[in-house]
Image (cartoon, rainbow, N blue to C red; front, top):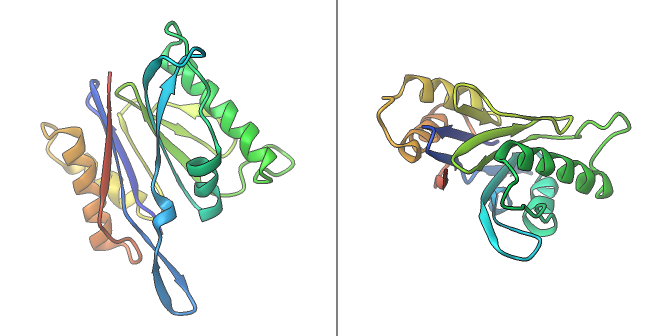
Length: 189
């Protein structure tokens, strides 16, 4: 069970996620593998080029791949955010296919990705297509719809980090299997 929520106010993007649980033989085990990966983006020469936070829901093995094995593409100074995120989607598709997590038609076997970069929110769908929600709101996981409704109803003057934290707290209250603590990451434009 997962709740991921992302929101941007146009300058700062925040992404929150629950710690989650895994039910196995009636035992509830802490799911530490669900933490998103925070990447420092670098140029081909190793210079800093921003920050990418990438979260996924679904199989723990998939999360393990993005946390421990996948390396984001490098970024030149002139690479626009959307172009860079398209590179990220292609890189993820290539990596996940090599790891055995893509079926014949190129679709991802499990889950979806939510990312924040340069103060913006992006989704990466099952065909590794990259999209940017016009509302600035994006959620994923079994608690995603509850978190989305909560974000839409919250005070629009709250900071993005406060909006996503509260949205995932509400998902924790109303969706079985989604639990804290809640973690929040941010990026700025």
